[in-house]
Each structure stands twice: as C-alpha cells, then as structure tokens.
Length: 425
Image 1 (cartoon, helix red, strand yellow):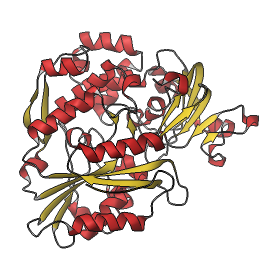
Image 2 (tube, rainbow, N blue to C red):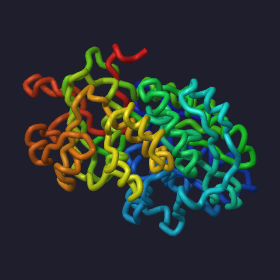
Image 3 (cartoon, one colour):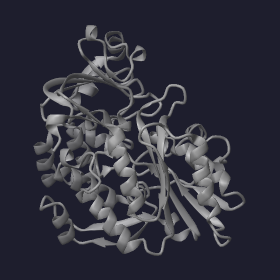
Image 4 (cartoon, helix red, strand yellow):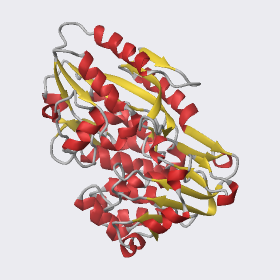
C-alpha cells in the first residue's frame, strides 16, 4: 500500500503528485489499457477530479477511458466533465454508466446472509451486478478513485461502494440502500463497519477476483476552501484491499466528524447551486446534521439550484407521491406498495430524508413552488427571504455571531458529519 497523509495540516499537491507518480511508475509494461473510475460531478469539491487528471497524465501513452461512478445520478454534461477533470482529459474518453440497463450479473448474496448482517431487519437475496464495461472491456487495470467521508448509506463512503453502487445495477443499489435505512441511519453514519459494508465486502471477495482493481482513496477537510473551490487534501491511500480503506476511514473520522457539546437549536445549510439540483442529493443537509439537531429545532436548507426531487422521472414521481412522511409510514408502505418495492432505493431515501417530527426542515428555493415543497412534508421559504434573513455569503462555517442567535452554519453538507456528543455512542 502507498500513502501520504497528515491530520494536522493539508498535504501539498506536489506531495500528492509524487505519490501518484510512484504508483504509476510501479506499473509494468503489460498494463496497456486502463479504466479510471472517479466520482461524478456531485463530488466535485472532493478534489478527486484533480487526482483523476493527474493519473491520466502520469499513465502516459496507455489507452485510458474514464467512467464516472454515476450510480443513480444523471450523466455528466460536457461542461461538468471539463470543469471537474480539466482540459487534459478529452470528452471522447468519457464513458457513461446506465444503472438500469448496462450491467452484468456476477452472483447473489443469499437471503440468510442479508438477514444475518442486518440483524433480522430484512431478508432478501441481493443480485450483484456491475457495469459491463468493467467486465467486458478487457482492461489490464481499473483504478477506482474517490473520497472517504461519512456517508448515510454505507457509513463511510467509497472503496468498493464506488464499484457496487457507483457502477452497480438496480438490485444491489436498491436493496443495499434499503438494508441501511431499515437497519437505521443513526447506527450507520460515520462507521467503517456496517451491514451495508459487509455486503459490499462479501461481493468483492466472492465476485471480483478476476477484475484487476486498485483503489485510490483521498481524505479531505470539512469545508470548501474559497481559494481553490475544493476541500483541502489531507491524505491519499492506494491499495487493492481493505487496508487502504481502513486507514482512510480512520483519518476521515478524525477530520470529518464535528462533535458539538450541545444539540443545535437552529442550523443553516447552503447547497451549491451547481452541485445540488435535487433533494435526492440535497437531503445530505438532513442526513449529515440529524445527529446534531435538537428536538424541536429548526434546520434551514438554502438551495438556489433545486429544480426537482429525484434524479430521474421515476424517482421524482415516487418522492412527490409519498413524500418524506416518516420512517414507520414508509416501511409500512413499502410492505404494501409495488412501486416502492420495485424502487427500494427510493424508499430508503424517503426514510433517510424524514425527520419523524423531531425537528423542522425548511427548504428555501427559487425554482420550486411552495406547494411542491410542502407537498413532500417540508416547510417552504422563498430564496430571497432566506438570504436576507441568513446572509450566508458573509458567514464562515460554524457558529455565527451571538447577535445572529447562535445559528450554526454549514457551507457544504457533503464534506462532513455533525454530531451532538450526547447522540454518539
């Protein structure tokens, strides 16, 4: 395993380049065709795009393709691809993953195994399928790239999640998401060992043996550096097995989990308009703060780019139909309603985005109406009213001046996890 890291201060991009150069130099002459699997545009601030561009340069004359790990997200536009990866990678090298159609089945995790890891919350088989590009593309090396950070579905993001969800098929995406939601979001957030991760680890051990994958995992600070537009880089870990992930996860837990002495009465989260266009993504504002919010508190989500709920028409329709109505209601509906049974990731998302009346969620939007926002069980505020009341462009992340009423401000929820000490065990 190769690594460069520092908890106390960011590492330089010169140090990162030297590590990536060491990795590239270690590859022998038989490696002629390479697939890079970075995150998509929703992880722009992670710096993984810059790492991908450096690898593309260092791999030199080899034939290199780039497959963004879209999962259920919308394909990247030409502008997004160029913005994230820079001009060095031609758009012609970008491949597109279609999670509904273009996958190959590798095997199945049994109902008994799923029941065991979920502690009895669910019992169903999970079909393991991944993009046919990985299986049929005849690549000599596949490099999976991405940030390890607290995550609502799996506990800590990336590693083999990038393969089984980012490049995965419907059954794995739907059922692993629902497994995590049924087991309990609060018991998963920020943990490296979770039921969902055990499913991914099982699938990797059983079904990926013939696929040459190396993981390049980065760990960054919480909060976007206004000078670079990225979060500051603190570590890169390169390896083929779980050892690299465990080291990255341990560093991320130290850097990306903010512990608060008391629960928050009021928090404001800003969602970058270029990154967050749906509540499918924007509900990270809820996921990453729910362990910090006080009962009876108020979470204000300022979302200038919000234009719809789901990333595609099917998911958008389900969110509009059922709304963020609470864990127990959604669990019951999923038992009874065929459309949710066929889209378990949507059911999981509705559970994750529900706060069960514990605190108020206010969404400030300019493109979606009051009726739409309230129709999914959130409160509504006009964007301009929110920006007048909460001048977030003048604020730094953290507690705002006492004159502002002790509001806690977060400028990008995807970069961390906020937890009241009394809610962590």
